[in-house]
Length: 155
Image (spheres, rainbow, N blue to C red):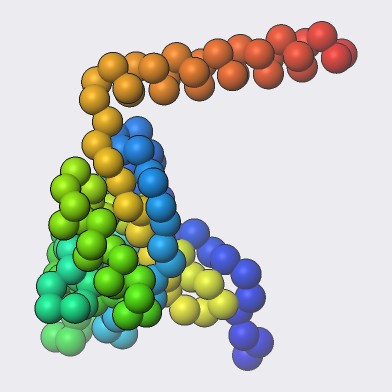
């Protein structure tokens, strides 16, 4: 059987980009059990309420929902268990310093397979205020409107 190549996105956290200013992103491996991998290959996961934290020099992904594998037996995993993330020590130190600084949190942005291995993209994020959200929506709407006008004009 040939090896997988490329990037297959399983789940994205669109809400995170709406609610937070993403200042930096990190790609991390994720420690999974067998039934979790099978469930992810079926394309089922939710990053909606998830976040990451640093404890004892390790990064943990908390509250990410990977549903139980439908054909699993007694070895099936818990859907919202805490999962360990695999990062380099320097990256972990950088994340720990930035989150202790205050106002920053680690939010999962996407979950995907990269060359057969499960990865998660973690964003170092700062919360938006309500007026920031409205301003972002207005900018996006203006960009869409300009693109629509240009498309119409180029016909």
